[in-house]
Amino acid sequence: MSAANGHFDAAETRDPAERESALFEKLRAQIALARSTEGYRERLGDLDPAELDGWDGLARLPVTRKAELVALQAERPPFGGFNAVAPGEAGRLFVSPGPIFELEGRQSDYGRVARALFAAGFRPGEVVHNCFAYHLTPGGWIMDAGARALGCAVVPAGIGNSEQQVAAIAHLRPQGYAGTPDFLKVLLDKAHELGADCSSIAKALVSGGALFPSLRAEYAQRGVAVKQCYATAELGLVAYETEGPDGPCEGMVVDEGCLVEIVRPGTGDPVPDGEVGEVVVTTFNDAYPLIRLATGDLSAMLPGASPCGRTNRRIKGWMGRADQTAKVKGMFVHPEQVAEAVKRFPAVVKARLVVERSGEQDRMTLKVETSGAGDDLGAQLAEALQAATKLKGDVELLVPGSLPNDGKVIDDQRQYD
Image 1 (cartoon, rainbow, N blue to C red):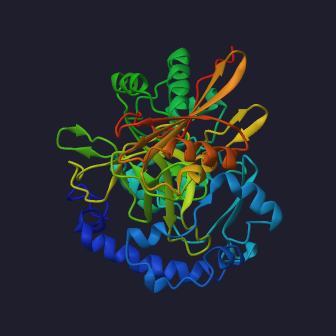
Image 2 (image 1 turned 180 degrees about the horizontal axis):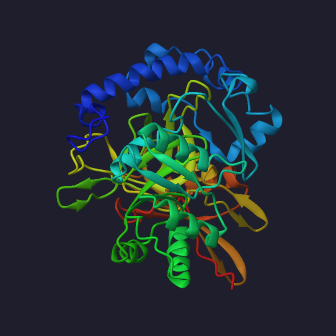
Image 3 (image 1 turned 45 degrees about the vertical axis):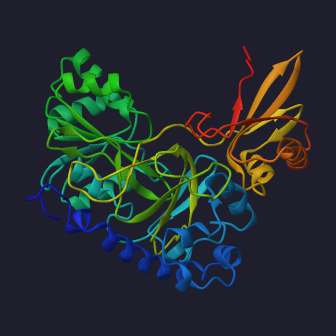
């Protein structure tokens, strides 16, 4: 860690080509580790790790969807066969909503959050009031470990008990808050109501919910500089906000400890930079290796480097959920089925299934951006759509650029109120 140049370590400012080479070297070792587990032995088959020499090679690997983990863990308890250590060799075992079970390794800063805390202005010797939950779920422990690895003391506050928390803040005088974006307001409002002094909190790192601009502005007016990070229970830190010479920087810088892709929802196919898609993450966790885990969250890659001086890739931030399953005429239709319907047509640039009500009946229209399409493409796509979904639908051919850049594969326009 080097506070002198405003960065956590030298890895943040290394040449992008150097970073990419190092990460893919680690990926090859991680694939070998993953293949030692029951879950990935089946998924990866006889893959030769030496073939993984870049992003194209990574994109050929199968995607594991976070939404699948519940079923996979039920079939092969407790972790779906993806754990590389026995449960008793882990540090902690967690139960997240779903339920989805996770394990924590025994190394310091298991979720790699110290980097995000540093970028948010936290420094060794400070006190962090940690309001992520400690009960069963990993959020509190991930942030706790990151703060202590940075050299901070932690108040393990958890959630709830706002009056008791305000009293603790007024007495212990922590410099920073960690927790969800909304709960900080609960505490500050309760402090105002009780006449308690919580002005020691001047910085915050938030996650687990959207930080709306109006709320960030309110915190700034109350003397608290807030940064957010994107992290999940399974993956730890994925990306984090930074500060540049002219203030907060656009987007979030990808963490040095993972590989992040943006793919078309329902597929494992990467989309061009700037296009909205689903966030897929590969970590280098030696206890719980996760290869191309599709988070179900939407984002987009931003072009260029951050003004803060960090040279890793950037995502735009959380932009909604990729799970766009719709029930049409009593049948579930998934983004994966739309991808299946169009994948054998090279002329298709982009596709979206629009679901509407017409004459008190559900109606599907497959809107397709295409160039150089043959006269029979529409009819062929209609047949493919019916084969994939077991439902009939219309097809509308569009010129490239016609569909919005919002990551939607299924656009359910029916009104339910």
